[in-house]
Length: 288
Ligand code: SAM
Image (tube, rainbow, N blue to C red; front, side):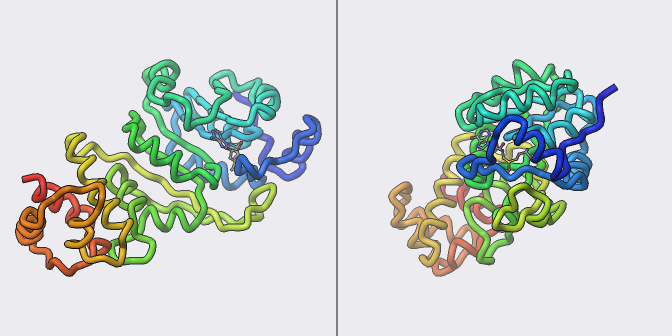
């Protein structure tokens, strides 16, 4: 029998931090969960089952990890702060299905980690992410095209809004398109600062990203994201001008005009108004 998770309470979190003489570290984005409802809802939203392997980024003192370990077949948790490793050895001691890796997630070969330790189980990523590097962590996982069914992530509210933003809105950008190309995003829960120790200065949101199959060959995908970067690095320019003058692109005026015509796009439209489908159609037309 797995023990009951016990850390998601202010007194329990404070007591373990004091026991190890540890202060939470801002530089690592440490805001630990202290409200039991939140990890319960995260595990529920992630649909974790006994056959799954969960990859957790940033277990902290092990609060969410205990809930994950109680439900999953296997948990792999990657923590950068070496000062927390002895704490995790204690708080996760009875969760034998859990493996803690002491490393910076941005420097770990996650594909290999999954191959070596997921025991052929379906993999779900679940994390209360450090907010200072949410985008690099998520982008590196999406770009690596990991064999992951879904990502259930606590992120800063504004970042969640950007992930699921629609064309033409102020939040819409390269992050929205990358997330929506690789996954289907769905906001699950809003979380107030009072649910963390210490309280973050921003609101938080749990978002679930369900992976979708690859839609383009690798070289086409790279071309698509070169176009998307060109458009959003110069948001106020017309689509024609972004395509013609971006340093990363080398399309001729004739290629661009022909592609815009075949996609029935006016040359003076701004790229930020295009949907993912329209960007894909445009990429295909430009490559012809
Ligand atoms: N999961 C815990 C919870 O919910 O209470 C802690 C979440 S806290 C918001 C983020 C965690 O990510 C911290 O434990 C922090 O040390 C860890 N972290 C920060 N940067 C990291 C990195 N580059 N690689 C791995 N873990 C990191």
